[in-house]
Image 1 (tube, rainbow, N blue to C red):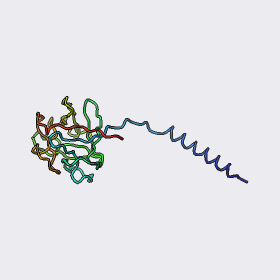
Image 2 (cartoon, one colour):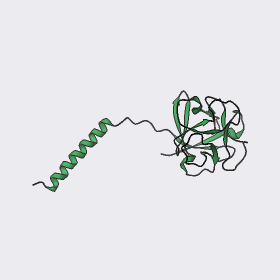
Image 3 (cartoon, rainbow, N blue to C red):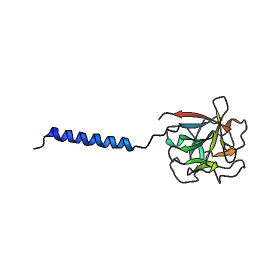
Image 4 (cartoon, rainbow, N blue to C red):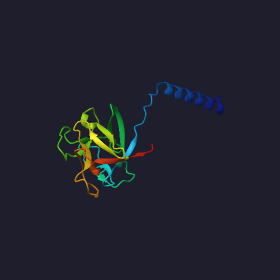
Length: 177
């Protein structure tokens, strides 16, 4: 007759074996990408995705009140060579420029599936004053807010020449976890 303590010992041995196998075959952990809110220096508003929920490609990036919604947070995925992909926490899509190749000013910034196209990569140019210009690798233009001065929610993010206007700079407010 089997005792209750015998069953517990057997269950404990099985659990120990399963855990050991899990450790042996567990993938190696990669360092987590830093997560940040991107706060426009001129407007004080956060970069987000329109509507904050859609995982569709080509949804526009815009500014919105900084709050705890996950669409206001971005992973900064190190791509090497001093570049990052800026990936939205809510949608898991990357910040890019519409069409991916135009060097014209005022082309919309939007989200798209993360891949190796250079328009999905960015250089974070530290300005030495706690702010950063976010420069697209493909177009060499900076992310800014259309018009550069509005403090309204839902104003579109676009690319523009990287000059010294404060709307071309962002504060990276790093988030825990």
